[in-house]
Image 1 (spheres, helix red, strand yellow):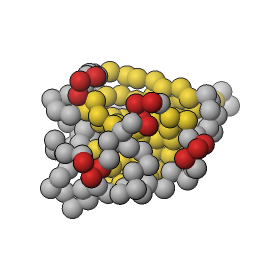
Image 2 (cartoon, one colour):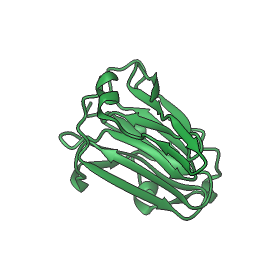
Image 3 (tube, helix red, strand yellow):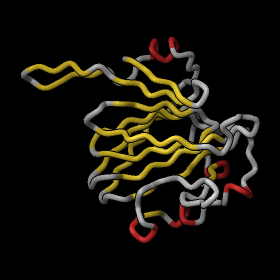
Length: 183
């Protein structure tokens, strides 16, 4: 497994080695030793799966406030997503900045996102399936959503607003300018 770090070594793209033969392939997706070597101290407590029927399904920008912050380890099992992370650390030089990644079932990239980043993604093809590990349990009381198309953030989702398939909760996300960072 190889990795590439971004945002002051916080966000990590982890590339899995793909071993192919006539039967198909084998790939190691998660290895605790790799995380220790990358100085990731999170203990993942839950695995989740999200399936989206349609292209342009948008989920996010989500995070949980302390003490229920969740680091995430994400991979695409089927399909393709545009994955977005936003730095929520108020004392960071990259506060309010975002990074965009394309993660697919073809490139086998995984992304590690610490708990002090908001996270969201948009499916780029139909029938997309995303698996992710989280480092804390879900708490509805602590879950927050930043508006996905907030003009202050200006995230290039590359979809027209009227084509995005979004939940009511995500449509009603808070604006970044009124957001108060707990981190």
